[in-house]
Length: 345
Image (cartoon, rainbow, N blue to C red; front, side, top):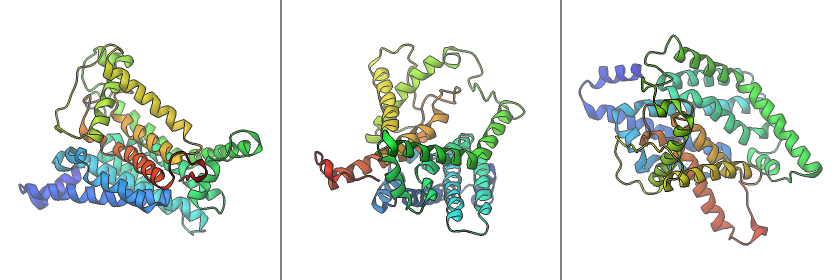
């Protein structure tokens, strides 16, 4: 990120529009890459286009795109998306007998390194690769298309011979995913050790620099995350009064309406993600995407630099709106109450 800032300074000096132009260009590039990822995953152009459109123009993206300091989010997202696409090509190269499949794998690793150098939270990229691998690249097991394979595997009953075969195939693919991406997790572990040790310049594990009830008590941080979740979802659907210095009182108990609602919302989404994995993979994918990308900024593992920031939703917003558009398409094409016309993506 500092390298890009240095290049910008050499080119633009004090001309502020130049810095904003770079941010806007990266945001547009990220939208194009997102469209390609979703189109590769689900083979639904309208779904990919509308999800990308919301990602591009949603007011909640203002902080990440218009603030010059938002370059870190934009740049890390660019390398994450680019790395996922290279990983797709790596997987597909085996199906088409490409002579040098390892090249795309190494390019994915390079993108991962670049993403982490752009922003620490990009360390979560291996989990995002694993997510896309699980929901799409299982198609490499046979000659079905990816979406057909996902439908066939995820909509079979879980009992009886077909169900056992279904779970066996899923287990095989999980093993395949782990074998493919373990170097990424190894790099993530090494990076974490370095940031917690020699590269721990400002107390990485506690940016507050002191022990208090928030830094020492996981339960309090969990309650704060419940409260933050309510605000995030409100901003997703009613993005008013947007500003950078957003905060709230840290709850010290569960029995607050917004905390209880946030807890129910989070638990409900997690249950829905696992419940829908068999029949509605897009819903499951969207929920997992939302939580995986938000996790580094959730304060759950370690106290973060703040309680809530709008730019932390730059990538998680994708998962929720993907689900919303998928539901709208299915309601329009398959009226509720007509189980014979159910469609799965």
